[in-house]
Length: 248
Length: 103
Image (cartoon, one colour):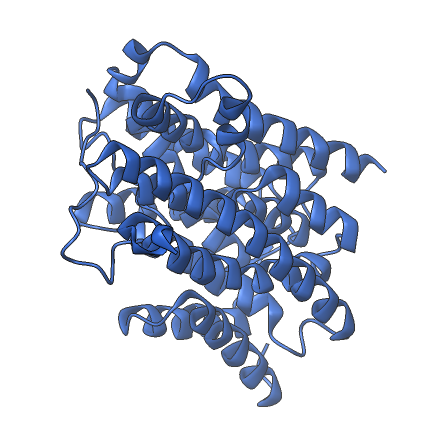
């Protein structure tokens, strides 16, 4: 009971419920993209990173090859490496805990942790959000996958439109200011131009190369685009914001 | 079977990224360029996935009901709707437009 008085645990639990619930949309879209139930569950259990999971099924749904799906998912997962460095610096997990911590290092667990200032709260926030989301995300993925399989013709239900909306919803919180919007527009244009000339799935990798080049040659905020899909502190404005440009 | 292979490899690589963060020395964190590229690539990939799912149909471009889904999702996001509502708005718009005979 004492644990529930911790602000980090409370934030971690509410973000777990909010994030876990949208596992339903992942599960449903995954089975209608052509993956079976267990492939869908493998992504949620083992890959466990919302953006990359949606990327994988998004490429498959568009007729892309498995290797293109892997490329998109893997490139989108690079930011988890940055989160890993941030969390490692804060929590310094030892032994096997480090391997467990790595698996639940995602947008939301990192944001919940770095939004706290007290080291023990940082730790509680990370583990509550990380484990809470893991359990609920997988539970709701299963619910969505079973529901999606029962739906019949996915187009009739507008599930291809749901995928479009899901990607825009993941992109949206990262479009703060003119520069990220410009990056998004340039990459979207590069994608559209590439579609007629290369196999399905590859235009997404073309956009990744363009985005990486922009990141390499331009000088902007070093944490741009690293906002979480869901901001754990959106409804707790009294909490300190995530440290920006976390570089020390 | 080969989809399984790429899928499991994706899982392995995703975990490798995460673990790498815990294993590299803290000095790498001080290079802002790596974190900058991770960020611009996240924006670029999500923008690309959004547009590809909206207008691509294999190797051709098509304007259909999915354009309505994009618009509906955008409106829902402007009104700060939660993620699931945004997804439902997209599905509803695409399904509705098809009922009306477009796309």
